[in-house]
Structures are given as C-alpha cells and as structure tokens.
Length: 488
Image (tube, rainbow, N blue to C red):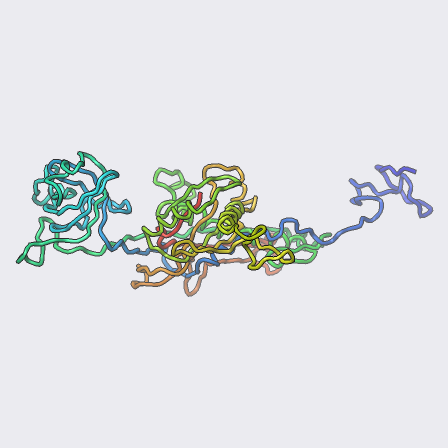
C-alpha cells in the first residue's frame, strides 16, 4: 500500500509500516522511510580549487621591519630623448622627456660638442650641438633662463629646415659621440651646468596592505558529528564538518594573499578610498606595475586568441629596447596556450604522411605529443606554463570568457635576478624580479598569522564559540618592470 506522512505518530503493536507510525520528514528529521544508501565521501568535482603558487614559482619572500619598501633602479647608460623642434631655420630643439618618458627638460645630459642623431618619422640628420641652455630663438640664456632648448648644426646643411624639418616636428634625439677642435680644454664650460653627467636612477616605493579573514563555529556545532566525510586542500578530513569550513576559509585566505598582490593597485589622489572612513591606500600589484612601468601587447582577445610569430617578434623588439633578458616565462590561459601550440606546430608540419611535431620519430604506435613547453626565437628562450588563475571560472577565467576590456591572456616574466640598491639596507642586493615583502620583527611575524579565540578548546573569552583569525601584511616588489609584458 502507499505510505503517507502523518502529523501525529503512534506506536504499533506489531513491526509493520503503517500510515500512522511513520516518522515525518519535517517533524521528526528522518529523510525517508528506510535508511538511505549514503555515500559518505564528499565528491571533489572541481579538482584542485586553490590557485596560489604562482609567486612561489617566480619569486621569493623576504621580511621587512619598515612601513614601506623603497628601491632604486638604474637608468639607461646612453643618452636618448624625445623632443620637438622650436625653430627649424635656427635649428633649436626643445628637450621634453628621456626615451622612457621621464621629464628631462632641465636634467638632460646633452653637452656642447656632442654629436647627435636627430630623427623624425620621415627624416634623419646627424648634427653637432653648438649651444646648450638656449631659448626658442637659439640664443644662449643666463642663469634662470629656459634650459630645455639646445641648438644643433646639421653636418649636411645650414639649418634643420634645409634638411626638411619643420617647426614643431616631433623628434628623437640620440647622442652617439662628440667632436672637439685641436687644443681645446678637456672640461666643457656651460652656463648652469657642470661638464660631466651624473648617473641617473629612479626610486620606487610600495607599501604593504593588511589582509584579514576569520571563521567562527559555535560550541554546540563544534561538538556535532556530521554525516559526510570531508577532505580539503589544506589537509582537513574526517566527519566534523566545521573543520572542512575552517580549512576552506584558510585555503581561500591563502589564495587572497596572492591574488591581492597580483590585482591590487594604489589608490589615486582623486579616489574616495584615500582618506576615507577605513583609511586604506592600496598597493601596487603585478598587473598594475606592468601597466604603469612595463609593456602590453593586445593581440586578439577571445577564446580563439590568435598568437603568431609576428606577435612574438613584436615582443622581442620591445625586449631588445630594454634589458634583453634571454630567458622568459610565459604564464598564459588555456586559449593562448593552445594558440601557441598551434603556431609552433605550423612551423613544423612537413613530416611525411602527416604531423611530425611532438615526440621525435613518431609512429602509429606512439602517443603524439601535441603540446610544447618552450621554444626559442631569435636569441630569446620562452618557457610556457598554464596559469590556473586565468582559467578558473571563479577567478580571472570568468572575465576572460566574457571577452571584455581588461581580460588578460597571460604575462611574460623574466627569469633570473636583478641588482638594485636597497634603501633600507644601504647596499646593492641581487633579488628575483618579483619578490614578496612581509612585515616582521624579532617578536612579531605578520607573514601569515593564525590564532584561535573563544571558549571552545583553549578558553580566551566567554564567547561560546571558536573563532579562527587570519592576518597577513605584505606587498609585492616588481623590479625592472620594463622587462615584463602583459598579454591583454
């Protein structure tokens, strides 16, 4: 007969399933008439869910006791500037910035007697620098005058306008040597300037941010045994469900410590974040550092990202202009990784009877390797690796799927170390291009703190609960960002 639920239950004289002795699902807590076939093990349907580990592969961690980290990076050895022509028929040039875009109007290193190459998009001329510290009319000025003009004399013509340049033309000015007459003194005397160039360097700073999280479970729930056997990335297992939740919170917090150093940016002066109620300032993460001080390549976004040798040749051209570091690591999403494999495969498709790339001497009985872990182009080596953070639907993968502005296909990171001057230590140090700095002293380390409060276990308060607290204070140092490339 059919079994129906009853609002009231009563005992039966015999062991039989009756309409009035069945425990109701709502009122008595039994899920069904008979015990279910319970699969006690929790199904791990998302594989490894954590995404941390990227910074551990490419960087290092180091303690600091100060409230900020300051480092200096060397400038370029040779002198090259951007500028515009003031007056072409007098050959005056206004120096605007150095080749990296830093203001050089009063600090450029061009001196009288230097020989320079003056180039516009259409013309190039070799010139002699006759006057430094000039006005727009090419007249030398006294102290306090306009200092960002120089006067040049083309070797081939009288003035720049005779070469073909015009007023306000955009120029690149590169010093390639000097020339002096017989018997001239070694030192060059110039108004308002010494006769030698000081090495130029640029200082950068970053401040750590404080990240917090917590998990809480009541005393009653902490003593309850659950149905499901759990497991997690942090090693938690067993039947007590609150350990699963605490372990997941810990794993998620560990991921946030890395994601924050990748995604964070400093608050702008106009941002309401600065000086707000919570008084937060932000920190410069990896993507922000590359955007501000490195390079970006757009390519073609979307699931079928087109990656070809032309794009990598453009990347090589940018690297040639900078550190020219030969070994680089590519951390990319799935679409870009497959596109790179297809691009490399197309370079090696001449095997007799079909595909020839992958495992050497392929035969029909061998597994065909359709992926590549690295390749060499020109004098550069690239090592490719999938980056879970860019693929996971719960992280950057959801943004990349939408093909929106801000989607990131990957990042090119130089291998090895760089030498910089550490302001705190007062000496040059060799460190990885990426490394994490965390606050620590002899008595307190804020690298990754975890402590328990409440009355469950060790009693620290009268709260009938166990509170697990997490805290870290850290920032990312991105040295030599001019050697990094963001693949948008």
